[in-house]
Image (cartoon, rainbow, N blue to C red; front, side):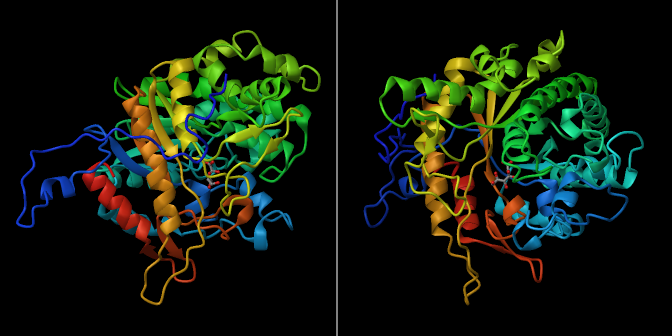
Length: 477
Ligand code: GCO
């Protein structure tokens, strides 16, 4: 059942601050130790990081043997991506990776979540491995380690190899097996330096944007195929967990990266309540339940029966594979959903430049507490939280992204509140390390802590980057 708003909407997050250190009155009577001590201190060992994905930052789309992905194809369909932009160059991270790792170290990040491009490592999606591609990620992982930063790898962040898409992509069950083979290849190559692994990034977004709205690659509007795609992605997750396990030793941890939306009724009618439960099923339980509980939510399966052939594609043993044990759940929180009696969603809070994103920090607390309540104490990591802001480079060379600082401060405070109330949250990765290709929005939105001047590829730390470095140093705010 979705949580009800935990605080009066827009209410200030409550927090428990613990004074640290004995007061040592300074000359002016203030206590310098308290001035340094954060009001909200995170547990010792809490890990602060940032996240990116391959297609959004790497560029080098036709370099060193990389195969084509569905996003290379999608960007070339007129009208699909704003200004006809592509990830061909992006932030040119493929060539600038060493400087970017230095930047990560300078920011004080202790974890960096990046994704491996499937077609860069296996150009056709199946078969021969591209050593140059694999070597790039080996350099990246080793480079992070050498800088005291823990790598976190996402194996699939939407860049399906085009040759597999030509064979049906996620509509084709075979793609799940090809994914498991690719995952094992990467785990074998990097398993000794990468401790934290995420199989899929937001399978729900592939379903909703790739197969329902058609706003993301492969750009389909096919409700019949959409939830078959959900199932085959979940099967791919389970097969990959099993295929990777032998290469990760006793310390490697695996899990999915799910964008989870706390769902609330838009009014107090019984109809809105009922619609909210089903909405929560489609948004959250359809992915959480098979992976963590070993069963699909029956209310969603019943609803799907009227329009989706998914039932024919769930074969005996599939859900057991999907339920292969995982040690990590990556939570990506951006926005709440408010559901009406008719099953529509309405906007309740101010939105960001991303039309779909409502600013509601308390939703972070609610989704984390709900996971604890319904799914137990699996280790949690926030692998995406952030917003786009109208960032401009000032004449003084500064980017005053005050909106990002207040957004992050409020969401960090809610994460702290959840930890205080018993949630097993161990790390937090801001989306994103740097400005990047924001899918159908192209480069129009800037989500980074670091500004990218695409004309020169210069990286400029925004005010939020400096603020975040202070948070990391203090381990709190
Ligand atoms: C995701 C993403 C990121 C986006 C970010 C902002 O993993 O959900 O789509 O790649 O850039 O979420 O939309």
